[in-house]
Image 1 (cartoon, rainbow, N blue to C red):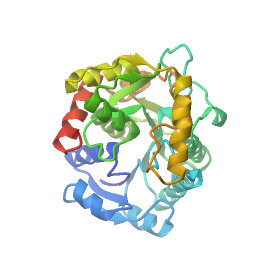
Image 2 (spheres, rainbow, N blue to C red):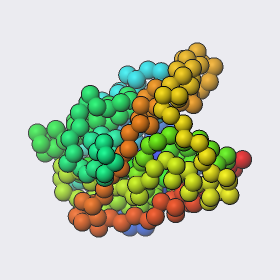
Image 3 (cartoon, one colour):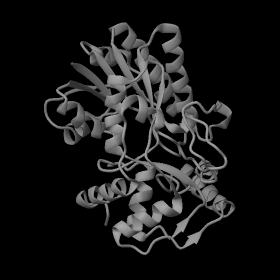
Image 4 (tube, one colour):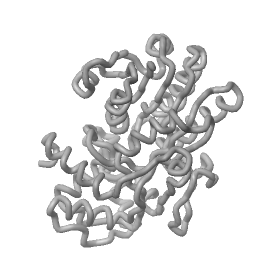
Length: 330
């Protein structure tokens, strides 16, 4: 059973690889940085250098593969040039799916995100059927993932693409080397207690559960169907309190009104555009998102795939432990 994985050095991908190895899969990975792959991944994996906009390297990586996990994406809350993100997330996904069809890949798991879904304004958990639109997507990242998922769904209907779609919520846990925006939030809270918080909510899932959900989607998912891979719904104050307690820090003390954060975002983006900082500490898009309560339900995945998830506290504790072991907590 030969499988190609894109995004293998990312948070979910690096947790998926050991699960596939345990199940006896022969694994190839398509990566931009072969040296990073050698450092991050265990032996016995075929490393194929390349990227999602290079059809020759994609064709080479797909050769002989029965299955495909497409996890790779440009995941940033702020980009100076959104077009580069669209090139990877939308055009790259479309090209990879086209080449997978040509290569005769039998089954595909495409990693989308809950950010492409709608949400309930009253904070009740949303499911896969809640409608959303491109206009409701706040950031370039969300817009690009929305368009990419639409492209995959269209190819399922029009071209017979054998793809199952998974929509992870907010994965937290070991292996977050970058770290992701949420991982950075956990890391900073473990350092200082997350004293200030906004009135927002999100769904926290252990990255190990999300990774295992990908394999379940390959084995049991219905072609063309969406599956939310999530965990516990938490308000940001609850997440900060949980993280601070696990790290032995004081915890959140003050709720900051969303309106008060806009000047910080404006200044941060200006500094980033002037190359005075690598990334803004806050962006206009992230502040707009902070006013939403984004709670989700994984009932469909639980019922149809047998998906289960651990409590959010375990995800947080495992993330903090990994950060500490890798010298990132200081």
